[in-house]
Image 1 (cartoon, rainbow, N blue to C red):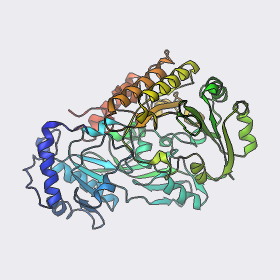
Image 2: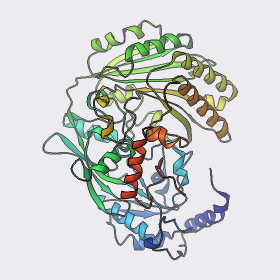
Image 3: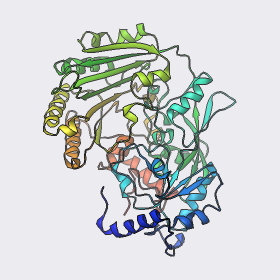
Image 4: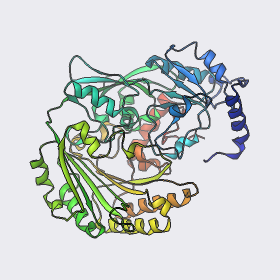
Length: 517
């Protein structure tokens, strides 16, 4: 979509060669010790990679190019508006294969990108113009350790699969809100979720990691081994290595049920709703067991064809009586939809429409922009609503599926952990918010302008605070300070560790600390 014109000729020739099944003669690679920043040759021969790399890795791994029937699924992304340009896929069958692929890429001046589940909003991924995708989607094993206090996760494990394995033995873990999202990418950015108020961020519950570094070496990373890298990996980990295995805390699941309550309000209730939300959560005071307060402003034509509605869903780790006491203020606001129930945690994802089969997990060409808040400025929310309705009328193709999303998870558990203990910089930012829409062809500029205008209104609603964004929601245009923290020491430390662990900047595609040149 953003293809550079001068690359069109070689990309088209590469496509023809793959489609015809004829190998392309590889150019002579520059040895890595002569090349500070390896760049992928204009043409990669799949036959050559299969022969040379195939001899090094396990026979459970697959190597293929765009002509393969497996290509579409292997390179599919949750957001395919801004995708990396992949030349070949190595679908690894063993954890040990990952290091071998990295070494092969280094020796042959080929870029590489790790792939677990393909989530992320950022446009920075599109700056990768050719290379090998290290696809880890086969590596989904979850193993409860004999001590029953931790579990081992392979790099491709995702929430639904983790919940299934742990739940069968009566355990749970701190995971993201969506069942389809991979543990790896989520946790390397910090990781927000429903159990955050009780146990901290997803990354706070990582005990140890096996990490492949940029040179292809494998190291153990925890508080006792490579402790400086352990700090960086929890909040900025996409910049430093590929995790092949996580060891995480697990907890005995003592919850009989989770209580959910879903509301839909019309726009005339907006001020009352956001005031009620502020009364409930204070400033970072949402009760620990009120695991989720998730909302959106969007069109629902079954209620109104012109006025967007306000939808909200709450999840409480406990009985209805306790939850409804907390929701008493919001219950006084007349809703057009008002439903509640008590379910197991896996079924809660279905009730809140965040399971793997939900629309929130569908692949689309998304455009978006995000911010972080401490509380809701009610005046700003009305301005955002008015902008939404105005733009939905002007751009109905965009407006039909556009959303203003509001995420609120109890942060009491994450606040209890020192802000300096990990690279995650936003422990005092309690409410991630974002505009997002699948963009119709030809409407990219209009959708981007709408997204940025929404972000501006959220940030103008808190003029005393500097703008920030959660790395896993970043659009790709933000400053490094917005993503990795405004305290000068944070970026200084990250840059120093980058020079130590990845001096050639091999990990530079996902909201990078040091952008590609």
